[in-house]
Length: 337
Image (cartoon, rainbow, N blue to C red; front, side):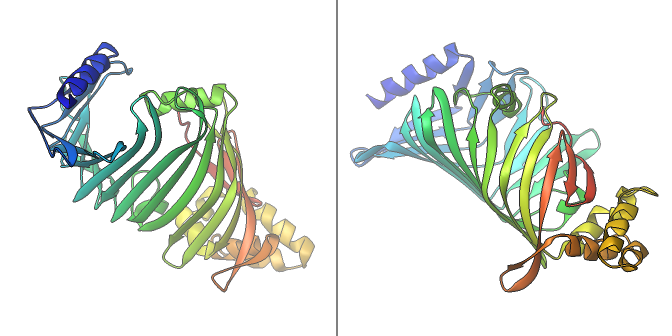
């Protein structure tokens, strides 16, 4: 019966442009569980634009007979990602990759994905470029409103341990620990599609990503935040997070505040604001962009505390992609689609 159901599911998926194949397939575990082992797993998602080909090593999917709506999977790397029939554009690997999916095939309720020691590289003509590397990355999502096929509302949580992403931003060249919980509103359904297409859906529906809690730490610097973000028609972030931070000066130095602030621009504006608080204070901030400006921004923010350490609370605003932390302009974020 399991073999027949698997074959029917594969045929239905293929008719929708999602073709899954195995170099070899075996089934076992009965009567205590149903376990499917797929060697040299390959997925070709022809329904996406552009089409996508994903290849990996062994894939094992198991369901206990007493809990058939919970599927546990384990993947063996490496994984290659690219256009069908073309050399891989991305390569991924890990020491352990596991997923758990709760619910029915057409109505998933919860999914968790965990990678230990993940590595993601972009392949180029002259070799590989590392995109991401970390000790552990977890992604958890569950449906809390609507239904998987009709405007679902999702809780999505991300946890990253000792993770770097040097090509995304210079600030991410040093290991970062993060725990971020969000709620997504505005999605049409949960059918397979590119992430950029899902973001376009959310924007068109006037949806929001509510950050219910976030904590990010890097060395001695810590930031916690809550707030809400949306997307403009050009795919840029728009919204505000309320950020409480310790070690702001180190972050601003890493961001290169002195390069971000042109003559007569942000540095002078902050200096003028500080002078209004106390004559001569702005001159101190102007002496060194970065540490000095951070001291000035700290004075302009609200005093707070994190883990018993003195902190400052400031708004982090996104205005059609333009980012500012309190009175300090931090530049522009790229469009997400």
